[in-house]
Length: 231
Image (cartoon, rainbow, N blue to C red; front, side, top):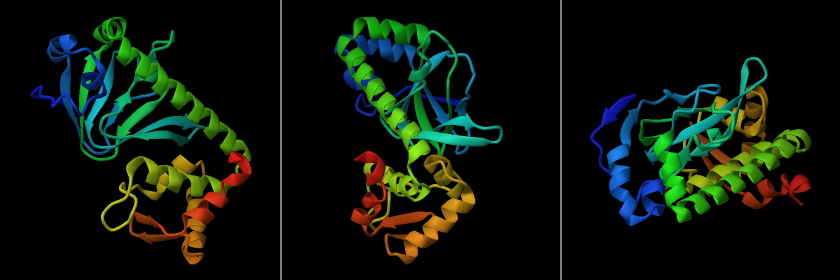
């Protein structure tokens, strides 16, 4: 990790956006701006919790061990979002890992200052509570889907989630490019199954694929594949 000059536009960081204006000088004095290379791990599952990270720019995957040699991607995080907050429980170890999908700039604060911020900034604390509740609901849905949803539905849902979170580029493709391995880890499918289903979706004209770029061309049919669980 490379520590950079500590600058912030006060709009790109969840902490700076939501804390009290009178608290901003304290934030400026306690935060560190860090550059992360593509593929670099920010923190690992089981590491002791030392602080909280806010994404200034770039995309990150949050993942967890799944079996002996596999991983399950819990979610993706983008600019303006928070990392490490799931380590706020009584067990002061990160329950997940996070890895940069591209060059990433982070804002980092140590846990002592972050806890002080929670005590002082009611709006920030409330918003964080809502965010964590929403993430818990999504995690519960993900667990249910892994058990009950057919693999085609999980892969279809993965494409829809990514489109909703990251939007689309000017050419109509989902505005994030992922490896097939990351896609399979996010959908809870094997690499071989993902490859087969993507080919089937392409033949059925539900999606178009060019390299790592994916365009959804028939969302109603993709959505239909998820309805047996979501209804």
